[in-house]
Image 1 (cartoon, rainbow, N blue to C red):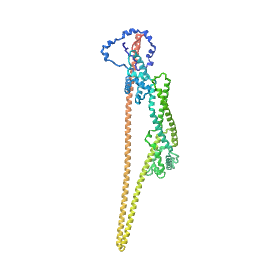
Image 2 (cartoon, rainbow, N blue to C red):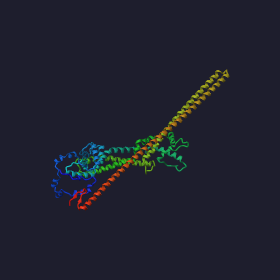
Image 3 (cartoon, one colour):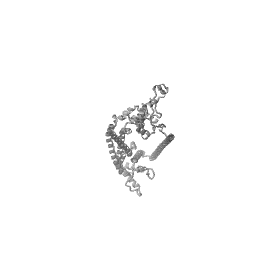
Length: 547
């Protein structure tokens, strides 16, 4: 076994092999040139070490180490972690990638592989190292073996991207279709709702009446963003809003318009907060770009079919995927075009500005109006029920009082007939009856006064309770906003800290690069000085170059 050279059979990772002096030397050297220049027999005689001598040295057995990788330590560690996670040998992993075996490489495993795809520089570096190791029968380290075998798969990074896109395609299609359906349902309901249209007409009429005589009067329409403002327009005494008046008018004279809220109920569903044309368009773009990439890679695989590994199933698998996916993509594109046309018609229908139109904001105005309208109508019905109950109670009391008075009159008449002979006794009894009737009337009046006072007290307590509840909700909302602000502030501080750490790491890396450059300059300077002194040429490692 020959001794190895002092600099080792590898090229430093920072050297670009393709543009370095080593690529020039390798391309110009041949085995025939080597035999002409070197005395290989003499070389073998001088530098061959007998195995038996090494066997008796205890240090050789104690200091046994694995082959050194040409990759960085961090890169080797990352590759090792992923391979340990996958629990696959490199050759089995290569087969799974070529076969596009989703049973071996599921979603999570594929994402892990995507983080350690060999770069072109790493593949070149390991290939050069492999040639040197073959000369001395030295095996490749595990990480280098991974780069050597996996890096030989053609268009590997594009392959993984296409595979990942194929895995994500069904969920992405389902998500887009779900959002398209929701958006279409809402926009169609807004355009088709006759009750909502008539309600807007009523509001426009009321607004023009209130604005008569000023520059805002005589309007032919209004923007939807003004709907929530109905709550802010108050009556002279501040007890009734314009929205309350609209609700009272609709309830009393146009009750059929109350059905508009049910017709637009889809708009107020929680899932509509995450539905927007912008998000749908972005996801559609992802689908289109993904399919374009798949098409390009399938065509590339077909062009290089003669060079492909016999086990490579990329072309067949992805061609089948294209056949399934392209009709679904076209279906989504057709629906998207139809949906964009529908939205344009909806914008024109409501007289909104297409420039900068945001349907989420537009829907938000209408949703807020629907909730406010329903709350106002609920309060109106509660008030009407309370008033009806009080009226029924008053009518019952009046009826009871009339019956009591009638009964008292009949009793007096009988008494007068019975004691007709005694005028004095009759007058006495009449006086007693009058007093009794007055007391009864007074008691009834006192009772009504107490009941009305109790009713007023209950109404005041109810108003106070509502005000306290509103105050509590306001305080809770403020507390939530404060908590959110604190959370965002903490997040900003955390990100600022991460930024500082990144800046510090950048400075360290820049300093290391500067030191390496300085060291390189110094070594070059020393080499030139030695050449001047001796008239000889040296390699970058200081070895003499013959001739």
